[in-house]
Length: 371
Image (spheres, helix red, strand yellow):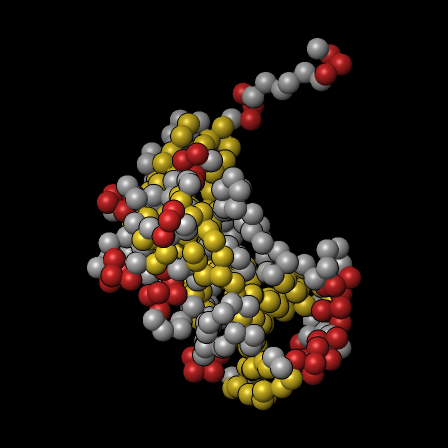
């Protein structure tokens, strides 16, 4: 019988429920209106809202087992603002997958939500965040939210295959943070792909109310891939990882993908980049060729604003928010590479392009009947 570890964090302390049979969990789940609402809304269990929560507050529920971030032709880096729901609940399945880490190069990886990086989680400062981690893989795993103030030995402990764990925390600190598997050896679990980004939007907005036209998440990481037997998918090279001899350094899980499929912005756009360095060992010296950052928020906290920055280092396990404007007479129409300025790493895949276009100069195609 599958058994589940269930934890709840409330008013600054933990209550460990117990190990309970899965049929009891199902009974409890069926009594939650917000889960029922999710099952009835659109595709089964994708995203739902309900009224069961803190003092009747609405709950937004997302099941990342059903909602996967598109990765073709490239990992979708664009993100949308968070919803107004004050309670956000996320189901995160752990799976082992065959991934494409460069064109024509496959790799046996481990994931949150079926992709590398895992899905972006976005909440607001003050939101109550509920996590349900479900281990659908054949080995122990865990999760570690750098954004959460919560006891490590309770919420972040490893769970066995077939188990799940639940906990909750209040998103108190604005910024962009790394989330990763913390099961030993941590290097192995991160290099296999077990990481994602969480954005905590500040109450007063980024830059104290600065409005942007587009936002993108960029997660830098590295792979240590050894050839598979008989031409099969590549596998982890532990010796190379210990020597920091990466085979690939990537943005959003795949080498050079944004060279072939540039990020699209328009002339005049103010653009915000949420950059996380997942490592496991390398930093990201983030830079856009042909642009200067108006503002950089170390760790993503707007209270830490820097202005007029050319390159900023995001350490392994860290994050930062970058803003720039693509405007006429300066960084106007054209192509702009974004890189880690540690070029030995960029040569291994951490390079992409931003394409700036002017909608006013695009000639519309005539309607078929007018041709």
